[in-house]
Image 1: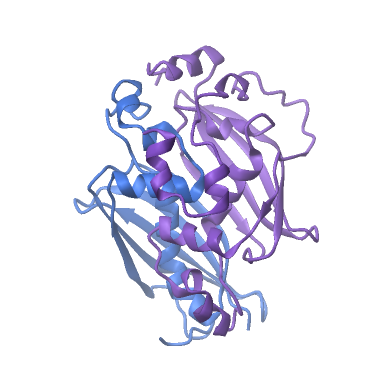
Image 2 (image 1 turned 120 degrees about the vertical axis):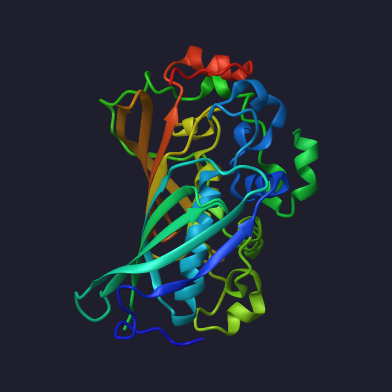
Length: 145
Length: 192
């Protein structure tokens, strides 16, 4: 993989996508991994009537979607020892069982500060196969050299 | 899904100890319209989190992340990082563990809560061997488009008091204790 430098990265650069399919088992395993056992993700019986999202079935954790969006950037940045510094995410639609989640990212900003503090912003979006927007992130990536 | 059913996924020591039941202590959870915003004192979470390799590896597995820097100890040891790199969103696991059940911040466990989005500032990646504690304080409470938002600032420090990560933890919550009780009975406790 190409070693990324501040000079080599520019606005408009497209990152390799990150794509995962999700099931109830995915939600259960993410609950165990994160300790977020909210029943809206874990309990298909409870959610039939409680319906926090006005739908009678479980949905994925927002933090799982945020993880997927961040993985898109760590896959790109960590091999070059870049530092993920800030993540701002917004969830626009809950993730439903059986969906394929497609995360795509593009470098949107390049900040010229000083060596060791220069950074770029990657705009990431998560969509399902139908093209519905599920979440957005802005992720700042700092270049150590 | 019962505790016993979820147990088939447990692999780490902490997973075996942590209660999967968010209902039992719900009467003790902080409630949107009861939180005292005149008291902005930062308080410690109930628990500390000693980071083990298994914690970092399972978070990556649960997040369907196959990056060997997060999964393969030998590969990570030989990399310039010199060891496993925790996924940036691993802070979620740390916060749920450290906040605990009875103390401040336990509203993150509220049945019926919805996640509108989060803000994270990462100062250093978490490493195996660190012991993390979380300090938190109320940051904002507001209504937007009929929904009740609560936001706490949660700061994660290591054993050397180095700030590793700051999270502005935000959820849309049921407004009152009565609304939470509805959710506990499987009735929707939101007006929007």
